[in-house]
Length: 305
Image 1 (cartoon, rainbow, N blue to C red):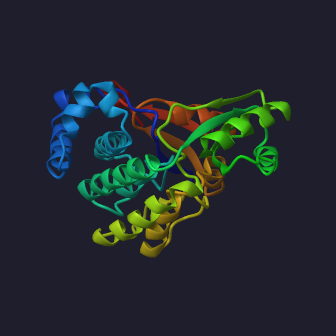
Image 2: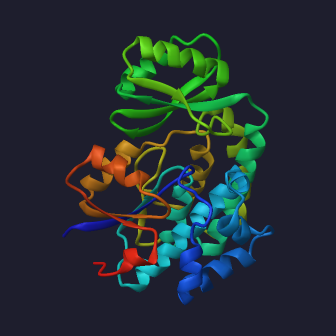
């Protein structure tokens, strides 16, 4: 029997006004949003719905905003009678997967996401780091080229699709890496507008803080299985989830392997839930056979199956 997966986007998918249409036109969405907003010690509602964009783009705001919208959309989809066999998220989208699986309550899920955003924001300000996207080169070749970088730490961190990998590290090392990668045959190697070297070893301090923070939450294992970013394997225990929270902040996002794992587990249909269609584009480049449906606005729920 074919299986269904829900997947959730990460940072970069946000925009001012995200979720506002849901909030103003659907009573269930309004109730879920209000419950989430009421548990936070800052005005996420105003930042999400009204901006300004500079405020929403701050990591500490972006991450809980995306996860909040993902979870409310998941609730609407569940109310239509559609449930996931498996869930996965890209980077901070993995936190939406924790909530969508029932491993955490929605408000706890957003609360720990807000903590993650705060810690990552704090640590990224301490290091002179960033990220760059590399297009048109196999990931194994990229890793090989990075071994020749002399000017500091740089690592392959996001394996998004066969021809797109993101590297992260110290800015001088990234600049050197981009030159070497182009010389080695990459079509493009370009710096990204991000506030830190996310998923690189430079963010380990954020992982240490998250490890302590995770002890304050009530995790559980449910029938809906979570596929991890760092290993592309099922998280089978509460300790697995807590360890993923720790390692994911300075470990890789193995998105290619995640989609391959879902296919191996019998998934034939994936719902991308949240702002934008970034993951759908990546999934189509990983596996053209999987059926994909985006859910972002109320109209997306019409005639859904």
